[in-house]
Image (cartoon, rainbow, N blue to C red):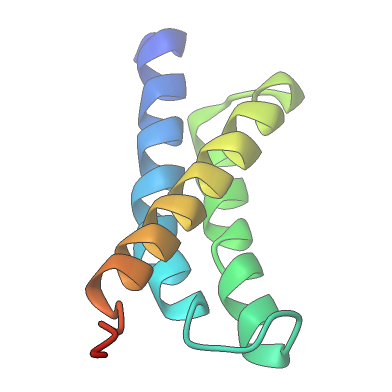
Length: 88
């Protein structure tokens, strides 16, 4: 596999895995155990994939950034779906 294709797969995987985790994270109070769990649980899988594909340390910032993007997307989806409408 080409390095660019491996890097793209890593970025897509990190983002895709973190979208449902970011969605679930929104159900917990900030900085609680559940919140930390859903923020960090994807890290071992991403590290494993990075090592198995042979990508070096230089790709860590890309995987972290894409994991954050996935968390943000998942959180936004949760807030949008569970928006409480005010009735006056």
